Amino acid sequence: MHRICAIVNQKGGVGKTTTAINLAASLALSGEKILLIDIDPQGNSTSGLGISSETTEKTLYSVLAGDCTAKEAIVGTSVENLFLLPSGIDLLGVEVELAGKEGRERMLAAALAAIKDDYRYIFIDCPPSLGVLTVNALVAAESVIVPVQCEYYALEGLGLLMRTLRLVRGSFNPAIDIEGIVLTMFDTRNSLAHQVVTEIKKHFGDKVYNTVIPRNVALSEAPSHGKPIILYDVRSRGAQSYLSLAKEILHESGVGQGA
Image 1 (tube, rainbow, N blue to C red):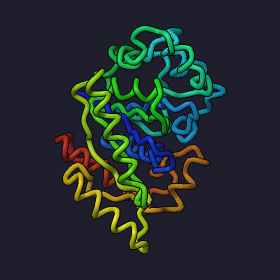
Image 2 (image 1 turned 90 degrees about the vertical axis):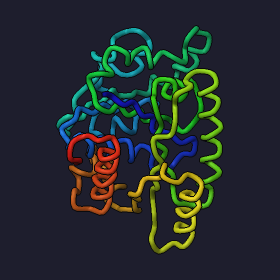
Image 3 (image 1 turned 45 degrees about the vertical axis):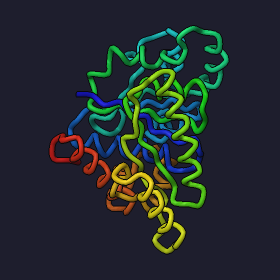
Image 4 (image 1 turned 90 degrees about the horizontal axis):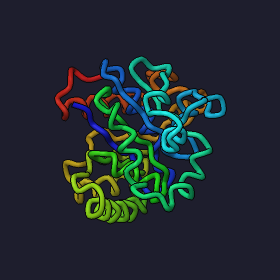
């Protein structure tokens, strides 16, 4: 059975793309086929996997514009079993182009219909805003994974996201739910970070993954080398934490032995 998860948080800078790339790469080590869709015009998941949007002939924009199928735009990556549907700067104009188009919120879901059973997990890396692109991701997805930075405004951002999910459930996708909340950028020396973890667990209970992603220099460096953390520095705390998160997700879904 496939699973489509949007990785989303309306607040920027919370480790969303870092989670998208490194969770997808870690899960690919299990032997399952994984697809990462970069639906952010900034294209950070694309460049973070060492793929240049400038030299990529077909992107997500090509798919949404009807110039090619999703299958034709998907490319392989340096991680075995991990595939990417790349983004490009041309996605910036898609919201204007789709503004008056009927059924614009369901275009990504329609594009994925033919290929979704080819992958165990499909992750959609969303932009940090609620526009047509993010709505497309939430309509196409069965659930969301929410990276939350361990800082003061975390709960406020989660409240906004919960309202967004209620709107999407009411209008487009009644079944969408939270797959899990990933606590990111955790600094053990910061007492506020510990308080935030406690508060989020109190509010969301078992929706919060046990694995907490620490602040880690290697995680920050890896994207500039176009590599997920497991290829850049597998022994780092960042790599080990995402491998642990992947095992936790595989255990919950009952797939294999984990990464």
